[in-house]
Length: 131
Image (cartoon, rainbow, N blue to C red; front, top):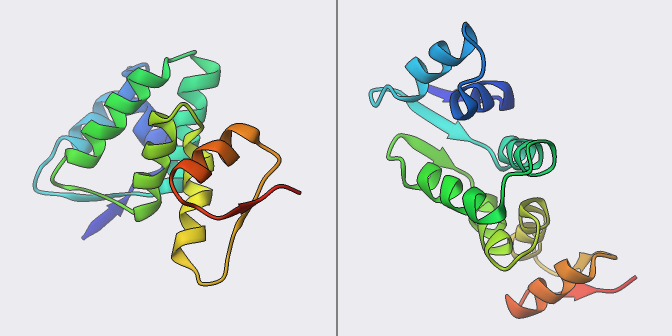
């Protein structure tokens, strides 16, 4: 069985901030006999919370994501890789997850007002249009 991890479980695991829930989350997520799916949507929420609520630096978020991706029993969807690329380029993880879909579908482009996302998309050869 594969467990699809919700944001609250991942945050309890990462932050170890709840005396009841954190140990349970840790018990599950450190069990290498279990398999976990880390969706890009869930990681968008985690990154947003850590970045904007707790003011975690982007470099720390990159390290955290690289560790998640490298964990053998953690499965991530392909949007996570593009989100990580955007984060490494100084952009937002969520913009990278959105941009992933441009490569996933035929005849698509990224429509965004975000100048930083446009710049990173151009660097990564992702087609975009300025509205």
